[in-house]
Amino acid sequence: MKAQSSFEMLVTVATFLAFSMPIILAALAASQLKVEDFSLFHGRTLVQYLSDNVNDVYLQGNGAKRTILLDFPPNSKNLTVFNHTITLYLASSNGVYEISHPFFANVSDFNVSRTGIANINISMEEGQVKIR
Image (cartoon, rainbow, N blue to C red; front, side, top):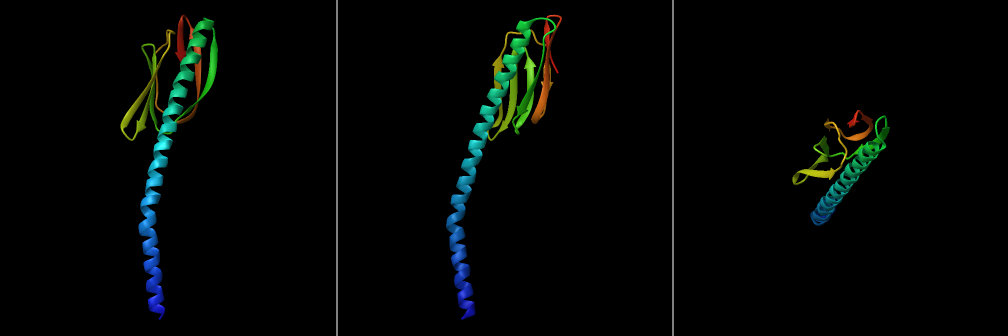
């Protein structure tokens, strides 16, 4: 009798898992897509914020300085400042995603690969904005 009740319990648990696993996996996949969408929004905000600050320092003229705190998304690969464009490269499920934003300041080239929070120093020296 004990063997029969143990077997019935095993069948009940297996049936429950068989029906619930596809639902759980689908929910996890959907939540991953939402996290990726949030990361893309986060990247767009970061690039626009940096661009706005670079332009502000440029407009203030020589000697202007500003330190900003940037929070890079966890899937960020590289941030590049080149040819009047700031570009953030993010790893996504479809490959590398590029987020770009233009600016009008004369800026020295800048390249950083990191995730997490970072202090970025922006200064105007001799007619050119420098990012460190």
